[in-house]
Image 1 (cartoon, rainbow, N blue to C red):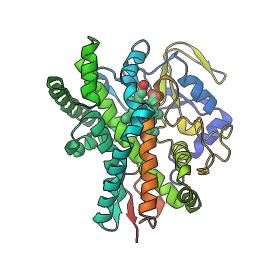
Image 2: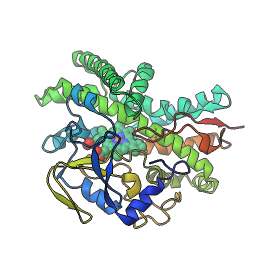
Image 3: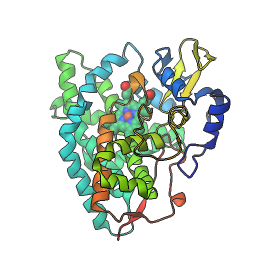
Image 4: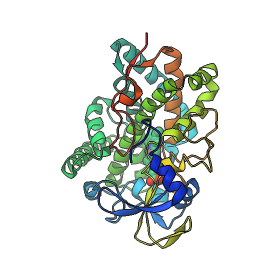
Length: 390
Ligand code: HEM
């Protein structure tokens, strides 16, 4: 189902939610799955341990053939269930606390300023994705993990392929192999001489706890590297488009930078770019929204439909940065709620504040409905965003 406008949720979501909010659909892989469209039902499902995140289970309702991911390595955090998930998440959650992220603020500000300098130096029209949206979160996650940024073209290429639904299973396998062997080598080096970064600290922690697990570290690094840059990059590009397209909203943000935090929440809700990340497999029979879902059946908690549920958000298809968009599920909900959300929020806040302050005349160089949207990707966004400013 295609987004409208081109970025409002598909019209079908409203129809399904109104007529038959828990319904069965056929996926591109030929599998069948339930979709949940109400905010209440999506949150109930994500908080219920009778739904598994085990993406390696052949019955898991993925939108693409994920066999290469299954075969490649140990399940990462996002695919774990209890009892493994809790301890694995606790081992790394300390790296992403609000306090930890606040300590990164000055460096993130520096990275954003440098990216804006590069954008302006590139001359008009410049591609915002190449100069700002991608480099900012990529550089931040590289520094946090201890991955050399010099290799960014390599991992951006492969993670882009993994997130596209058009990639063939062979190419997917190839990208998984490339990224895995790259990270495997990097972690071997760090094991020989632990560095002061997230991966280095995890190595020391594993040793202290007598819990050394090289494979687990490779799969954690894989997940964080991919989850840590594409998502935020897409939100930067889409956020810039939406704010420029809604000048009255942008004016509010310019008048009072205190509004940026609530603008970021609203943009996250409005776009809900990772709408199918919140997918599960029932391991017992469960009733959701009055419908009996049987053990072994897949369920997609359509977070974009949930975040546009009129029972929770008035005028849900309107962008309203002052609405205080609380309780949205753009970062998921429950045990697997996004580990990097504090980092993503901070990056978005710094980018929007700094970009519109430093480049007040920023404009999009093409009609918005002609932009190159990621229509067939697991995470929605923009491939490129030409901008001008004089
Ligand atoms: C989980 C969205 C940024 C790391 C999730 C989930 C969503 C999500 C919806 C839940 C998946 C599920 O329920 O199965 C987003 C969005 C982002 C973003 C919209 C940016 C705007 C980041 C960043 C990082 C990150 C910057 C890392 C630095 C993770 C990890 C998980 C996760 C590790 C799995 C957590 C677990 O299973 O316990 N994200 N994410 N994300 N995200 Fe994010």
